[in-house]
Image (cartoon, rainbow, N blue to C red; front, side, top):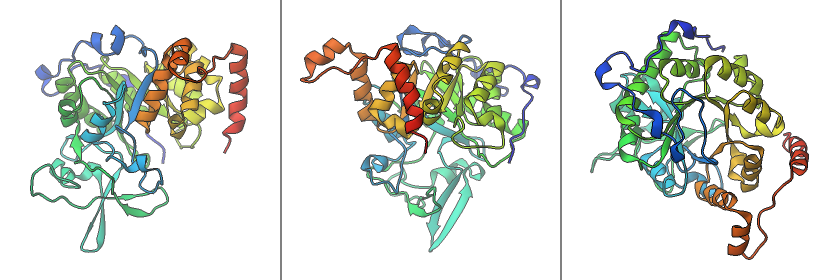
Length: 377
């Protein structure tokens, strides 16, 4: 189903979201990025190489044989703070807005539960806040929440069982309870199968911005979204925080052509004043020449995807000039990146093995030509 294009020129540029205007003044962006780099109205610049924890300490793949993928409940306060124990820069999470107007953190479009042998499925954005928080473990002593199930990609419904569970949470709660040293990569989550009208998108984004402006303080924030119109609108509605467009870079095809290639992503960002792109890493490896085109367009580039859990793939991206990665195995990748960022001589002295190789431009070019052949699948 095609997404409706929004005429962003008709939307007023707002750093004060309508409503309680007095309380919505944006904070100064001058300290939002570590190392003293500014964002604000200028292009986003990442210090060194960013590592971002996917849904906190990693997403849950309940059918996976890898225990790390079901160790801690994703998109939870516990997961965010666990990730912050490692040298990450941001935690990434998905934000939706409940039917009564509260931004909450949850990835799936539908929430499932079992009662009296029957499975009930409800759209998350149709729930009230109290209904949403009533699923899963409860923070109140003695209170039992509704069971929480999950539908896998192949359609199976399984119990959402992890080694260490935690309660569902709101965006406001995250600002107050997550280690303040961790930046937030706020993904604006929308259903790919719904056509959103302009006023619907604006209402949702304003609800999110109210919470951000009231509670972010000095915490670094990046907005991102797969929904092209939402990305354009959040940029139009505020100029304090950088906005990145999320794209599968052609690894999946959508009716909205803006979502189907890195070229379309560059066009969208350039025309809409967005600061960067977050691409599926396979899309980058299949089209490595796009990296320089993105840089020439003065856009930042981050990546996500399973290959980002492989240290060698992360190292290659570092050599390519990509500015950061979103990862699930936070401990493993932060350790690998910490080693990469230290001088080779220092690594060699500390470890009884050779330092990581350093490639010439000719060798790197060869690798980039080879990789697309290796990952065509």
